[in-house]
Image 1 (cartoon, one colour):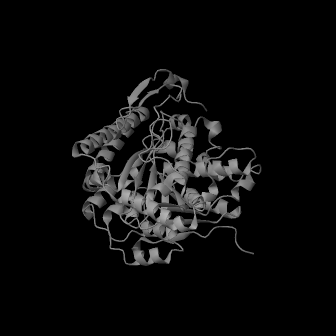
Image 2 (cartoon, helix red, strand yellow):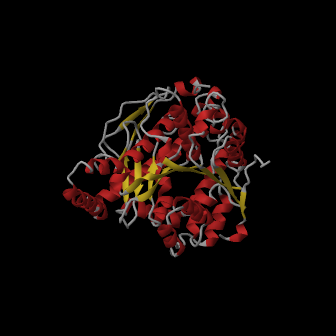
Image 3 (cartoon, one colour):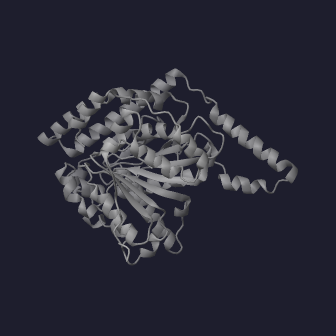
Amino acid sequence: MPSQVLPVSNRLQSSTVGPPSSASAATMLLKAEIQDDPSTSIIISSQFEDEKAVTIRPLLTRASSYNNTIANNTSVGPSNQQRRRRIASDSLLALLAEDSPRRSFRQDVGHAAAETFLVTRLSLKLLRYLGVGYRWIMRFLALGCYALLLMPGFIQVGYYYFFSHQVRRSIVYGDQPRNRLDLYLPKNLDGPKPVVAFVTGGAWIIGYKAWGSLLGQQLSERDIIVACIDYRNFPQGTMSDMVRDASQGISFVCSNIAEYGGDPNRIYLMGQSAGAHIAACTLVEQTIKEAGEGENISWSVSQIKAYIGLSGGYNLLNLVDHFHSRGLYRKIFLSIMEGEESLRRFSPEVMVQDTNIRRAASLLPPIILFHGIADYSIPSDSSKSFAETLRRLGVKSEAILYEGKTHTDLFLQDPMRGGRDEMFEDVVAIIHAGDDNARAKDAVAPRRRRLVPEFMLKLARSVSPF
């Protein structure tokens, strides 16, 4: 009889390869201007009420999806069908290949300054909510040293993010604050490309779409389009808002990615750390909606080829005390998650085992979970347990563990090291599975250049507060 326990692949390093607290909330009234868009202003109240935001149109007008476009073309006469399709395709690719609209240097510098201010404000917000006790003073000093040591890499990635014409920043996908996403486009747009909808991490407090710029740059070099989805953070929103924003962002990608050269039939959902948890909650919630009756949905789980989780936590009931010991205090965490009674709802591993909704699990796409064994921020057992649970329910799933890798090794230090990155190659292999031409190109792809000297990477790893 086959074992019900999922075999876990250990990748050896040597192979190189309750409701929010009324006491604290009652005194809080925060007005924040979203600096990357002067036309949008948000009032954040103690009850985390959603404020009305100005609706802004996307950079490109919405049109029918890739499939609908082809379907509509069938109504055109046979003599004109191929010619019209070719003209439309060539025009779109030419538009994306051009540097238009060409932003001036002054505009780019202004945008860079606005983004820098936003990052600073998010960091100060985190400090405000975590308090300034001895433990957090030491953690922030460590964080400052960590960032300083990786600064050579951050400067290069930041330059690419702000000034590369392959990056389409702040495309609006919804009408709520921070309902924006960044697109990273390959240089080669000779046909529909696979797409990764990526939800960044940030402890549910300082998540931001730009955190995915390094991954976006590197995947776009392998002819993969990346959409980094931004979402409201605490205290601007709670977990329900984050899931709602992520779902709306995924819906936008599914409906509109063909306009940017993406293949709507090859969309992968990916998240890192808190983003992996948010993306998993969004996916499970969508399967429950689809398994029910009379639910209105704007996208379907069947449109997602696979879910890829990186260093995520999927059972909050087992993680509350661990987070508290790491400095994300229980009171704050429960405020983010809308109270202790909501922990079960926002634990994907628990939800899929509910006998009332177990049928929804059969709708899930293949799920692949990556985790470093030396991860102390979120233990690797979180991914192992979730994968084993899914396996027992008949969901195709796998947990891939990397010996000696920490929470930030897989996402920051290893990519900045250059050369061959085992986790990155594993992700690309999943996305390019079944595409012989793409895999042949991957086999001869040049090694990535180093962004940070090795001694600085080792020092950063030793002082990392994560």
